[in-house]
Length: 144
Image (cartoon, rainbow, N blue to C red; front, side):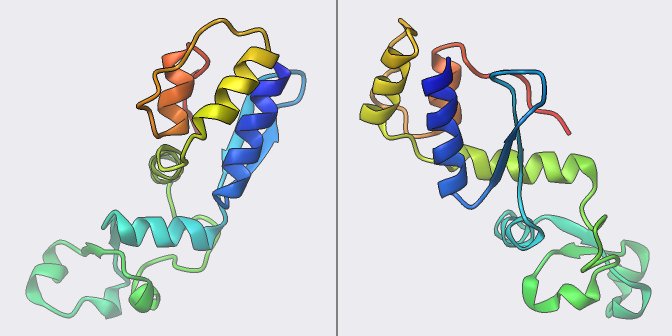
């Protein structure tokens, strides 16, 4: 329903994410995030990334060249600053985590559902937009 799609687009954009409708569909949205947003989330979630060979400072890093991503040390990581720094699965993981943190405004969400003729009523205790969409059967799959 169009009012629900517009509400979701607005909430997702307000969280600093990019959202676009998939061509030839009315309700499928493609959500992405700028590199800086992905990097902040990777640091927050303590995502391990591969180190550049010259950045491996201790014996354990020589055998397991991974370290939790830290923005202040981004130059130590292989591929930092390049378009393919995050793998497709890492991007899905990070964007999903960012989406799960998007809050739902229950009153506005309920109004959008009603305007879109959706009869389901979401539980009031839900705070995440993704959980609210799932609770009324409006969440599809998340993929790269």
